[in-house]
Length: 304
Ligand SMILES: [Cu+2]
View: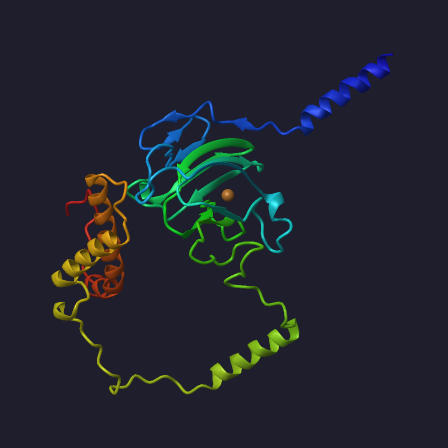
């Protein structure tokens, strides 16, 4: 009798040990405003938006709910990967109100982070769920009106590179992203066709070639470095004005302001203008850096 009782107790006990206890964050979140919700246990939702329609949406087209799991075990079917979501590709109609239940099956931290959303509506253009697992968290957003492919990933260091990457297509999307496990090819695929002896031989040949190469002599026949003056700089006042006018016309032409208030339209225009200037700045920044890098810098707080 005692023996039977102890068996029952052991079965119940091991059952409790086996069952993973998922912490449910949905009732614990505090609203910090601007779609940012957080709790004391490390759960976080950013870019929550269940009410405001993105520009170009006249109404919510569909209301959808999905559950996405994240964890090491979902990467097992993808050779060389360590982490993955249980789904690599999502597709929704434009203007869908989407609720994502994110379940982290691992005992570490994971995110379901979506990029490239309009910044007038989503801070930093992101919708983002994050929890230390095992746990669950839920967030809602309204997808924009245009056909576009959005990157969804976990931004914890190396988790995306190790496989936690997916794509979310709104409408037809606008192409496929690289290195999505099971969907698209790796950008930097490992090459296993070369054998070790071949590799050693190749390394040896390269070393001999380097040893036998003629010494590099500085000579004066090198073409002088072209100096970029302010006059041929990519960003001039005229460029910026032209860019602004072009963006306004393009936005009107594609009906971008439908459903937007005046302040939203202005915010949208500035957003587009900033993106344009950012792109141009990236082109000239290397030149600017080159000229200013020799100047000494004063650290904040030191007045010497
Ligand atoms: Cu992760």
